[in-house]
Amino acid sequence: MRIITRTVLLLSAVSLFADIASEMLYPVIPVYLREIGFSVFLIGVLEGIVQFLAGISKGYFGQWSDAKGQRLPFVKWGYMLSAIAKPLLAVFVLPVWIFFVRSIDRLGKGVRTAARDALLSQEATPATKGRVFGFHRGMDTAGAAIGPILALLFLFFYPGQYTTLFYLAFIPGLLSVGAIFFIKEKKQPVAVIKKRHFFSFFSYWKIASPEFKKVAIGFLLFALFNSSDIFLLLITKETIGSDVIHIGNITFNSDELTIAAYIFYNLVYAIAAYPLGMIADRIGFRKTVLIGFFLFAVVYCGFAFQPSLPEIFLLFTIYGLYAAATEGVMKAWITNLSHNENTATAVGFYTSCESVAVLFASIFAGALWTNFGSQVTFLSTAIITSIVFFYFIFYLRRS
Image 1 (cartoon, rainbow, N blue to C red):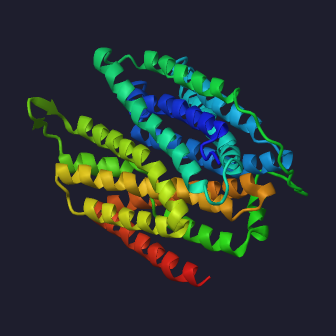
Image 2 (image 1 turned 120 degrees about the vertical axis):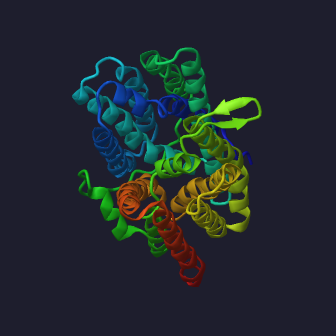
Image 3 (image 1 turned 30 degrees about the vertical axis):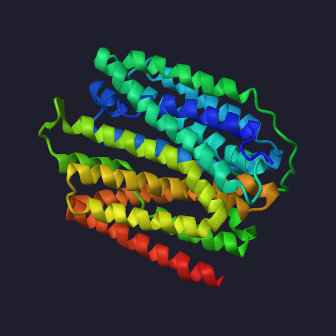
């Protein structure tokens, strides 16, 4: 039986191109916003609002996908909205316009996520889901590594040409949308939903299996203290300091090394995602996720004690392995515990709750860092992760 089907391959290519487009802009959007007059506070408000919008809408559109018994229209519209938003950022510099365009971009993610993951789940069996989701995450994350590299190369030759970069990002975005039209959707069951409104997907908890609830509780407790990766980049920059660093005959400043560490993490994640998905199919999702949580705790403990530059890159290597062992595997596990006709609702419910949890985690981490310093912030996260680790060892094993 073929594990990586035509649909899985095409969906992975779609995610690859879409992430190249998004991550081409990831390193430069904060700089561009400061250049057109945004304060740091306003940037924080903007990103907080649009990320929350993307997160909370995943459940709504996931349930809508189940109610219609269709996945592909949501995938198409989701990627199309995100692709269109890239060049629109360069049209006007008014704060209201920037908020509107960033909201369209993130709303696209909300529209497509649950339906896309349900489509991936439909292409796999319970015995192959780790590999299917691992392959998709690997391709997706490869785009997250390629995008910043392309952006840095462009800005190296054309410094400050942010507007042109926004237009260029439309090209991989357009390729991602074009690839969707080669996907053929199979017929699937239609979920019977009596009342549907924006927050009705939360009612999935009532019909979810006991095992789904136990797994989701553990995942969401972890998410509640797993703050944005921006904090890892901040501690990296803080640890390196403002001095330039000479490696051989090449000179790097802290900003360049921080971006390099982020790219390196994504490369490790992209390479390891499929092999760890294969391991998950063999040894089980629970054991693989436990390995990931252990690696996560090691990384956060390591960053709490001012690591050297080689240690920073070692920690980002471990962090890439953690991501490969958890992100795709957790979604595969969630879909295995959901009902076939409600897969998108289950994924949407979990990812919406996860997004809200991560928002609170980032606020909490920021408050801890401001009042008690980075060491307390990172050690607190490592301790909570250890609690979740033992929850999955003992409580879930007994059940």
